[in-house]
Length: 141
Image 1 (tube, one colour):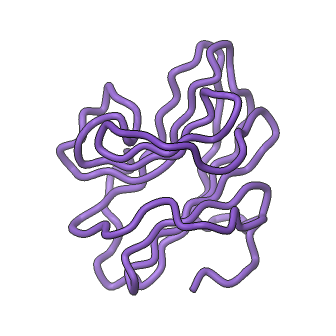
Image 2 (cartoon, rainbow, N blue to C red):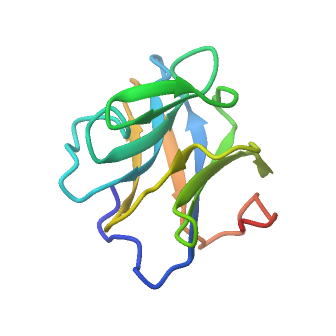
């Protein structure tokens, strides 16, 4: 979880995660969480969190402990983007700069933090909050 919440004045908040090495277990989750989120858990697996995971043959999204299939899986070399639109309270994801084309989550409210879970021996990621150019250059509206 990031140390600071998403600023309340943001209308859109976007970040990307570069998968340097997915590791042995290939368990990575990317999303958002509330401050009280259990940091020993994966985003979406506990109440107050939302996450897109790669630990299956396809992508999977989780919200507060329940999950559904969503988009393609991801692995070493991929970049996953995550966008929270506060105007309509939705989240969508990108893979390697391409919008996955559907809303993953709706009705997110409150003080939220960017959250990434990595539960994979030898795994390595790098998070970009805008210090480098994003791969996604499309419209987030």
